[in-house]
Image (cartoon, rainbow, N blue to C red; front, side, top):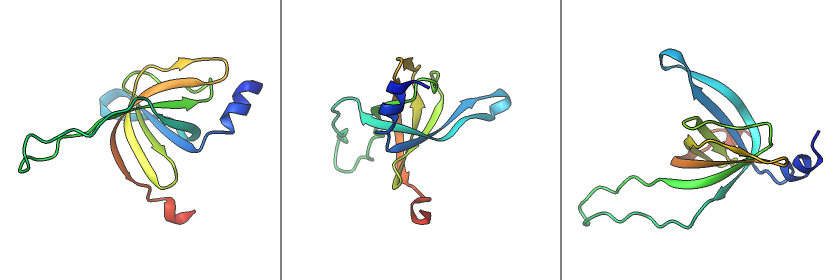
Length: 120
């Protein structure tokens, strides 16, 4: 085991479930509820609608996802990250691995309440 990775993983407060596109529109499960840390990548502002009657534009946010070094993703993998109360859904970039951790930029497209939160 990697001592640095073990120390860093103790700070992970989120979990990630990941899927990769497979043949005929199916999705392959890559991992389920693996510990991770989700961090805001950059300061972003909410988009402004063109006028008060216009529908709100879709918001997309980029976050950095930190995982153990043996867990990496490819461009387009679908990720669901939970903090116990919310689930963040989005698409992954290609991961970059270090000896102590892996970093993946995730474009979050949707946030929802975690349905499992009441069952803890």
